[in-house]
Amino acid sequence: MTKTTPPAAPVLGARALNRATLDRQLLLRPSSLSAGAAVAHLLGLQAQNVKPPYYALAARLDGFVPQELSTLMAERAVVRIVSMRSTIHTHTADDCLTLRPFVQPARDRELTYFRKGLTGVDLDRLAAVARDLVEAEPRTMKQLREALSAEWPDADPRSLAVAARCGLPLVQVTPRGLWGRSGQVALTTAEHWLGRPAEPAPAADTVVRRYLAAFGPASVKDMQTWAGLTRLREAFERLRPHLLTFRDEHGVELFDLPDAVRPDPETPAPPRFLPEFDNLLLSHADRTRVVPPEYWGRSWQGNQAHCTLLVDGFLAGLWKLEKDALVIEPFARLAKTRQADVTREAERMLATMYPQQPRHQYDIRFGAVVRP
Image (tube, rainbow, N blue to C red; front, side, top):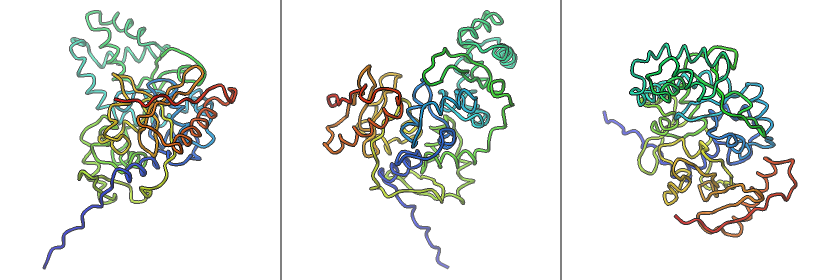
């Protein structure tokens, strides 16, 4: 009996991956989802600074107003917490209580870099002391360092505070994060802030499906990059009978949900203004589905990320909001039709983010082409 060779997995080129990912990321067309539903679908929004989650939703949602997300935060339906890749994210309350336990192994691994400063410190006792401190009243990191140093005077103060952050799910309390408000970073536990206990970490299989729904098609390494975790292949293998498989142009195996939309590679992709640290640019091991190889590293300077412009679905420049102007710095000369499309999207973004401002408060200026 002759054995048949299984057919080779279909190949998805960069444009096919780009359009599929943009569709999952709600960037091909404005989505009708609510702000809370979008935050859940996207598994959180990067929130190293206060404004990026608002700009991220402005780029994705139809009829979004900043106050919608701000109200959710004030009502404790969404929170700011360190989660994936040891960075601050805005998560729904439910995801805060589940995704944080899911990535806890990464927080445990992070803590190993500070072991030298924690010699003689009982980490379980430290977590208990820190919990009592921040649940008695929200504390800044400075206050937490000082209070913990009083208990362990021979330990490194920064290492003590990092141990508390790694061992406990610490959320930033409002008014930090509210639109149009200011407030220093003050921390308490997620359980105390939300008034309910943390839940068990979800099964890896469940998170794989959610990741693919928001970032797929993707490889095992892509998801590990997004989560800051290792050893996720077993979950993909368990799910293999229920997933579709593809290859990218380099032969890397990609997984996807069978009912997920994978648009035609030539589907139009409107310009989009994204904030610094947007997860679209950070959640794959191979970022060429969004970042052309010749522009690699152009959206970063040291540890600081720039706000980015997408044209035809790919990274094409930077932008910044100055006192009286939105300044766009393309990486290459834009054709007149492209420039007109970018201008229209800039006007839409400004009207979304600043509806109370006079219509022409901000000029839209194109700076010189930014060379490497």
